[in-house]
Length: 78
Image (cartoon, rainbow, N blue to C red):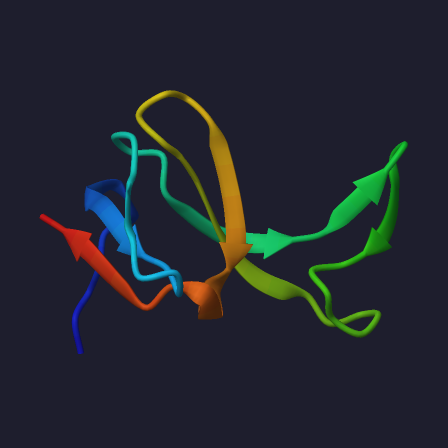
């Protein structure tokens, strides 16, 4: 088993076959949900009461991204 320190993730491979650069120390793993006007309407595309794990990061231009953890095919880290 490999231990991956979130602060050392440099890039991730997504299902489109492309590697995406991660801004320094911006990669995190947590539950996620969709909200509208402060109300949760889809909690991570999961049945009610079951949290979905996702990854969140910024690219080198400062844009924010989130995806289901299962969408990450590979991780490049130092």
